[in-house]
Structure formats: C-alpha cells, structure tokens
Image (tube, rainbow, N blue to C red; front, top):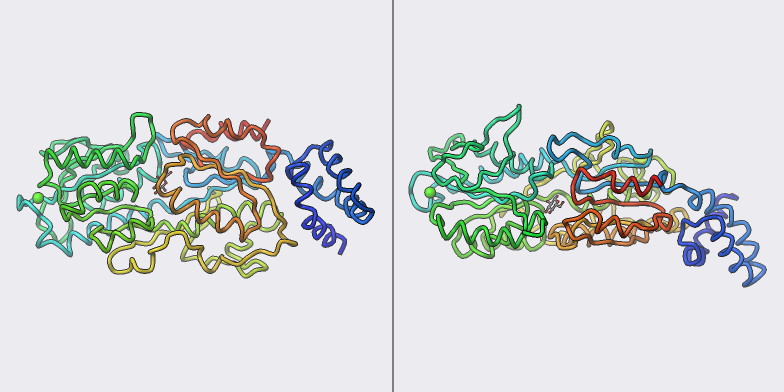
Length: 445
Ligand code: BGC
Ligand code: CA
C-alpha cells in the first residue's frame, strides 16, 4: 500500500522532479527540487517529503554503470572475426542486445532470389549468353549482419567459396569474366544456366559512411555503362542501396532487384518491379529495444511483456523472436516480402499489434532514455526503426532523447553523452561493432 502510494506520488510529481533534477540527480539537486516543491503548499510538502526517498532509492542514486543498457542493430563483436564482445553484452545485469536472426534472414534472402530465378528461367537471361549475371551491393564489410547477407546470397546461388569453414564474404570487385578468386561460377538445382557474380563492392562513401545509398546509385551507373546487358539480377544487402540502384537503373531496364529491411518505399516498389525484400521484423525489434529497458527500470522479470504477458496484455509469440541467454541477445525472426504478400507490409512503421498496448503510468512511471542512431541518414533506421521507436516510447512511458550520428565517427555520438547522470537508461547503436568500450567507459566513470 505504502509502495503504491509512493508510486502514485512519483507519477504525479514526475514533471516537477524531472524538471528540477533530470530524473537522475545527485543528492544536492534532489534536495533542491524537493524544497522548491515543498514551498508551494503544505499538501505538496507532505507529498514531497514522502517522495524524496523514492527516486533516490529507485533511480536517483543508481550509478550509471548499473542502469539498464541495450545495444541494438549493431551487436558488440569483433568486426574481423565476428566473435561476440561478451564484456559489453554483460556490462551489468540489465544489459542486452536486440537485433534479428542474421543467418535465418540471410538464408531467406538467398532463397528468395533463387526462387525468383527458377520461376523466371525462360526470360531471365537477358543477353542469352547462358549466364545469369548478378551484381551485389555490400553494406559494411565489418558488420556481421552485412557479412551474413553476402554469404546467404552466395550460398543460395552457388557462387560462394568456403574459407575457414564458412563462405568468404569478401567483395569481388569486377568479375565479368569469372576469374575472381573470392567467388566462383555457380549453379542452382534444376537450372541449367550458370550463375555469375559479375561485380560486388562495399558501398562506402568518401567520408567513410557505409551502407551508403548514393554510392550504390553511382555504382550501378558505372557497372551498367560497361556491362549492362550482362546484368540479369541486382541484389543488395539492404533496401536503401537496393532502391537507389532500382531508381537509377533497374526499374527502367526491367531488371529484378532484391533488398532487405522491407522499408515502406521498397515494399511499394514491388508493384513496379522491385523483386522483393526481407522484413527483419523491425516492429518487434523496436519494441524489444525499449522493452528490455522498461523491464530493467521496473525491476521486473526480463521476460515481462516479451514471452510472458504484462499487466497490459503485451506479449510476443515464439514465431517472431528468440532469446539466446548465453549471448544476452534477443533476435527478431525474418519474413520474406515478395509479390505474393507485399500488400501486408506496405507501412513499415506500424507497431506490432500484440505489443501495442499502453502501459499504465502509475505502475510504470515515466523515465528518461538516451538513445542514439549511428547515422542520421541511414535509410532503414530513419524511415522504419525510429518511427517505430517513437510509437513505442509513448506506449511504454519512456521519454526518449534521440541522438543522430554522422555514421562515421564514434566520438560524434559519444560527445553527446556528456552527462549520463541525466538519464535512467541507455540504448546504443554503434558506428562500428568493435567500439562498445567507447560507450561503457563513459557509463563506468
Ligand atoms: C539494416 C541496414 C542498415 C544497418 C545499419 C541493418 O540491419 O538492414 O539497412 O543500414 O542495419 O546498421
Ligand atoms: Ca546473361
């Protein structure tokens, strides 16, 4: 009863206290805010006195190193070996990663392209040379999700070469004559034609930003100018780059183009010849990103509102996500989006209905979250992920400050985490998967 009263008062006073002390104040600031409030009336004074202890115990004195922390979209890991950075993933007992199942998604993407080729075998070889030529846009050679997608496509088309027990994801450069050493000419079961990766490269701009759509738009211009009639299929590690190539060249040349992310514009383009894309269930990921923070802030079981229904009825079924305890990681599952089902995916920013119930603000009072997006210009994060986060932050009573990075330098983002004391929880999207320590160093101080 007493606890409930304190919680109610906390909700009623959130405005004042947050305005006064930013939700994570030192003792001095809390006292100052309490005094200011108490001065207004005797009733408020009583409330303020009762309340003074609550935020101190529940949030005010929590060290930054003990606050809930979620890594999302870039999993702390070695960009060369892919090995997970377990120090970062277990920074404290309220630290998690939220992403999607990269291997399952990569396999789906490869399968989607192979299925398309088989279904269109009679018309796919545009120049009739007996070779199905494709070009591949690579996002970031040091990002495990990008690597998985390159491998998935090469595996499904038979163009991959094994290296150290896995398919080599190295960009091939130009390979119109089939002489590259990182890929080989492939075959798909039941198809007589040869499949060749004509060209592939990492789409990084001169300033260093990866997954760069404009670079991909330029690349298809260069490629098509020198070997355009050999290109029968265009594949991309994501829709941002895929759509840039589709708009610049493949739509007008009627060459099927495949991406990843199921951004709204890419899904809409399926009606105009875009070959297909993969939904990484961003609606589930964005929810999980904020939900694991909410559960940490509420000090409840991490499964609340995830595998177990919460007090508002939010719950996810096991066909849309999985949790890997040893990796402290939540992974959303992927779904292929093609001409067959794209009508169901036209708006990528709608919250997922089973977890779209508003939390009660008295039981789950407002908290302040610092969240960064590594590149403010990233297509997927900007057009799909952030709009979803902005829907869920209201439903979960989180006051999120969104910070957009330049996609190139970690310090551009860490510089804006100057005062972690002001926040109750953190959501981090690194520029490079190796760089978790640049953030944890700030929280551990
Ligand atoms: C998305 C890409 C995006 C990248 C950013 C990936 O999961 O598919 O579109 O550029 O995340 O880290
Ligand atoms: Ca051909």
